[in-house]
Length: 318
Image (cartoon, rainbow, N blue to C red; front, side, top):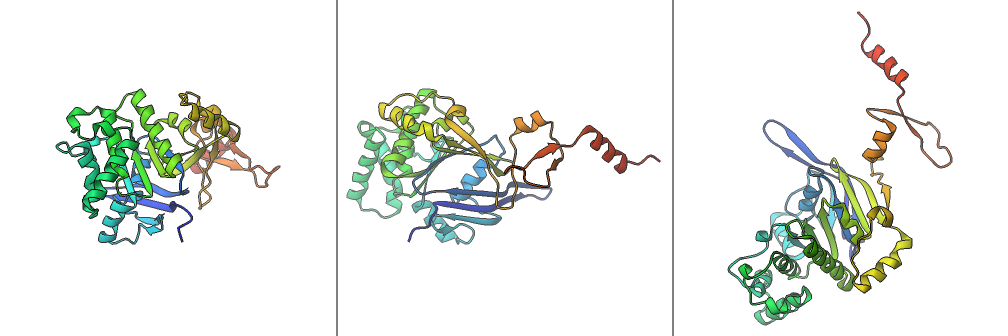
């Protein structure tokens, strides 16, 4: 029986230590990704999104919490099981093509390489490599080496390599960071087609909030925790499918197509959007209304008088 979630994180922690200090990159992060879902993770540099991707991909080990991917417990895998997990469960698409591609091999030979490590027979390797290159629109370029391919073509070969061993999960780390806008649109369209046509689970890590227009759910990470989610509005769902079928460019503002939700984690914590905190003038602490009012929780900033009174108590006159 398959696990109910492709990815299930609960109170996930990752701490990096040196002799002088420690950095808590993830601070009790919660996240669930369904099978067959296409999800985007967004956040500023240092927010923890790349750390999370490395943990999900088995490239790094969690410090604490729970992390299940396709039924595999990433906290308990030994080295051998982790190696097999990386080869069979997850496929990686990197911003830097050099991490996936061998320059002296042809496109087809590059796609065959992961299957060679798995012991797939030669004829089967060739047939699947050709089918994957056709899927990414590069069947006519299968005999080309990297020097003969454009950056966008290299990235599409990288996607074919990531899918070579039929992994149930595809992880894409800034997959369009090194290509122009037109090529980026083609790559995202390819990822979306893989998700829609074969049910491939795809997680895209990006700093670009415009990617929200291409997926139904976007999770924002801030300070090592999930802070909010952008979910496609139900009323726009049919229109989005029509635009996709017509091959139209989706240039709509994510703010009008998606609705933002604040995420309450398993410990009861939430992160309010920075623009709302600034508008309220809420810093340091606020007052939480003791009773629920009409199904709402009311939070008000500390008044100037209250703050001045607190300061006097904390710093009494000599």
